[in-house]
Amino acid sequence: MLEFFESVSRSIADPTRVRILKMLEPGELCVCQVTAILGLAPATVSKHLSLLKMAGLLSQRKEGRWVFYRLSKHDNNPYAPPVLGLMQGILDDDPVIAEDRTRLDTVNAVPLETLCGEGRHFFADKPNRKGSSRAAS
Image (tube, rainbow, N blue to C red):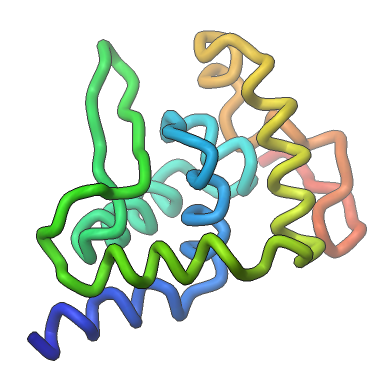
């Protein structure tokens, strides 16, 4: 049982993974939507999503060429549901989480075909959370 707790606690120890969990509270998102909000490389986002899924915090479904993630409702890890419940009541006033939610509203208004073409560079012309511009690479 300790290994189940360890996988969940390690997952929420990373700020990027916490951001992902918070942005998935309203509902599922495609990998390219998460990538656009975070401004990270797709491989990096996929690694974070995979770790959260292995910890039992996320579920996924595939639809065509897109993979969607959502908060898990399964009980494959007995510690996942209470941790997800705790997460819903915290960090709502954090500036990074608030910025992610603003970006989420923008991303949700864009068709997936368009968004997936731009990926992590979707917000490249907007300042990141540290105030500097994101450079397209």
